[in-house]
Image (cartoon, rainbow, N blue to C red; front, side, top):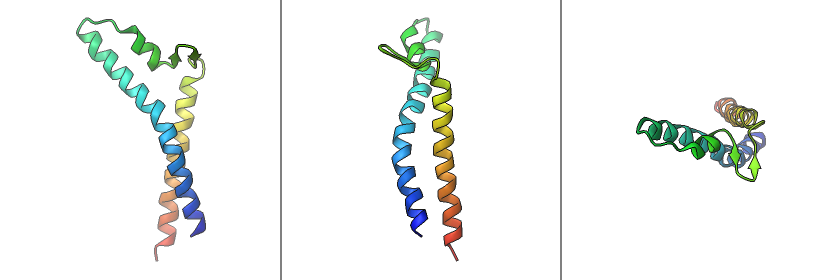
Length: 89
């Protein structure tokens, strides 16, 4: 039971941290596509989408960071799911 509680705490800590860049990437890509269809050039959205945040340029690593965050959150969620199935009688 203790391990399940630890998985839950880990998952609750990781999800907000991981969700922010994943949601930012999804929204910036979607809005860029919508604006481009309207003839509006919003290249700054593509910069956000690829990890260029002005002074903080993560473009060389951003894809790897997003992939790693996705795997970590999915892994912790699977840990919760598997742990919950073991606990049930």
